[in-house]
Image (cartoon, rainbow, N blue to C red; front, side):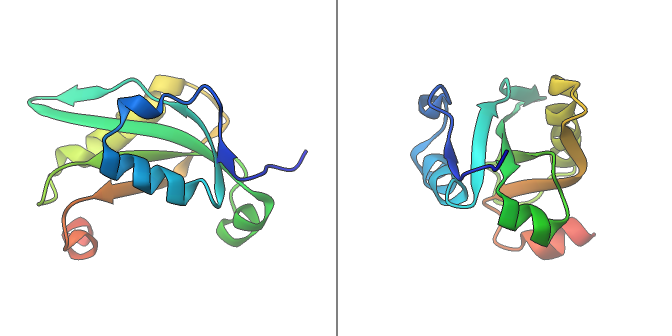
Length: 118
């Protein structure tokens, strides 16, 4: 069965900030957003996340068929605990349909590419 882009009607949009909702709507052009994860709290750091399923075209390009976890990080500098949060999102679902080899991080860190490499 083909996956069409969009958002599941029961997806809890109100659980996300306005900026996060804007990112969600952009992703929904190429993925089907299935469900939000429970909010995470690591120390004093809150994280919000969700799962999305790639459309056929995206699935081919990324070589992935399972759901992908997406994590929002509100911090302007990358924190190593963010990597732990990404793992915890996938652990919430205990589902073989979640691809653990590909994850999306949406961060306020303007230098995120360099930060995450180190």
